[in-house]
Length: 461
Image 1 (spheres, helix red, strand yellow):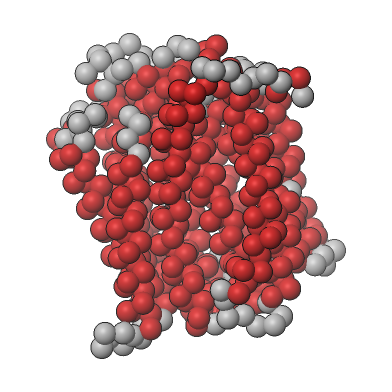
Image 2 (image 1 turned 90 degrees about the horizontal axis):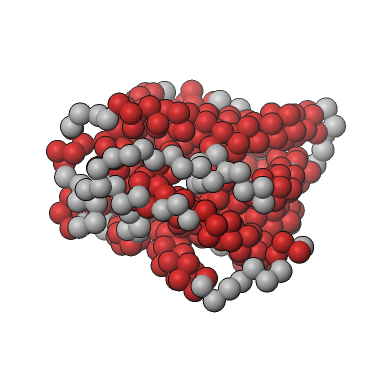
């Protein structure tokens, strides 16, 4: 604990000011972006367990896509923030074009596959016929939102590299209002329209994503004066050196997201072996998890932006100090989030119309999550906001791969298939790496060998 004594100093005020100015809009944006999915979940929750399960599985397909895009987004952000610290804008514009093209090509292929064969994708996640039947119409329609979502994501990422984050908050407010309003009308059949159920929730999400893209595009190309990105910049000649850097540093990140896609898919398949009540319980606990995690993720993203910028400026001694300081902050937030899950579980349960057999499963899962959130809120921000953002992109990939494939998935599979462990025990094993990786995170962060300069010499404007 000697490492954490006396680490606060008067000069930290400016760092905290910048961190808060970035973290609050990012956290609120994440919460509101997730609020679009939460609105679907809460309103569809009035239709019964099968509808909740179908929506949950359908939403997971988009989650897998988002995780894959997150790898490319992370690479762009890591490189872009270092160029921002070096006061070089042309490489950031070129990175935006490269990443946007790659993301749209990949997303278009996924959207086409999901839209044409939604039952196949859902069948990979669960054998429950009722859940598949409920999720199929949702997934077929919501696949139309994937491309506008990807475009919006990378335009926002371009803004984040230059510390412009409020536009993401504003457009999420608009999208949430649109989505909730359309959900009410389309799910339950208001204003003279027929009740569409789960399919209505899907159309509400599609329109909300289109609105998000429109708002962000207008801001990026017409309002922003910091990056000064123009549509023509997206169709210019790629800088081959930047593309090589993106491949070099981004490959471990994208490979890491493949690991997490596999992890989530297999975890979902394991949970999917339970009946609809078990899947519904997992969905509700996952909602609690995401609502809290969206806030933590905002702080993590803000830390990553400042980490890249500080290293790009060459202030490595300051970065060592900030890394020590933020570990204390992350641990305190973990304790707070764990307490919120434990004491807020009954309130969350009251929001849903659940069968009596589902309620104790939700309660047991929430107890497990409360414990695991403490470790998650420490290790994940340390590894993402410091180590990965600092340039050591391959370490996080290797660490995740080892724990996921050598411990988490095998232990949960054996517990369920051969030991017939109760649902809460299987769920605990699926989250057990949150604490084991905390020890790894503490060791790695305090070695300070992850602070790497990734920028090339280039023009400033």
